[in-house]
Picture (cartoon, rainbow, N blue to C red):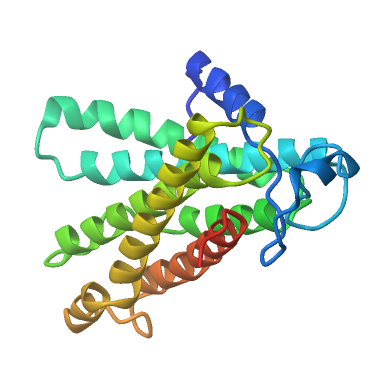
Length: 243
């Protein structure tokens, strides 16, 4: 896709906000530390890789989660806009969606590898780039709706993890508890949608419509994206104290 030249000042503000709020995630399966011992770790939590500079890990993971979320949102706008249900609005959605997608994907491609989470998100973004946003005749609506649901589910988990992950350095008390609880609900909801769409009846039905990943290239790409996104969800869920 052709890269456009329009810039979004607000997106830079959002990226900065994500990096300020996001702290490196603790390793999957790692026990949460007593806050009294957090001074030994400098930042209140280790990166998913279990080592390295916490400040650097914070930047890596913050930019990765912003880049992936931006690409997911852009992908969704592209798919909705290409339905051609409203010519005037659809053109705006396609143009904006394309730019969001390209800039988010570029951010992921250019980000430095460093933590398990950042690397998993880079991989998911790479697979998302291979997804075709216009499905074949006869199954286009089902195909687009499936991808929109997957995009939403992954974005929901990522947003929930920001709220739910321990050791972010947020204020204590009831606000932090409420934030973490809401974040875990978002993660659980996103994971449920992801499983229902990528592993359940929805996937079986589209396969029966002639969209087998064994014979249809665009469906094979969907399965690869589902695998990569599933790994991101597993890391975020484990780090946030999920099942």
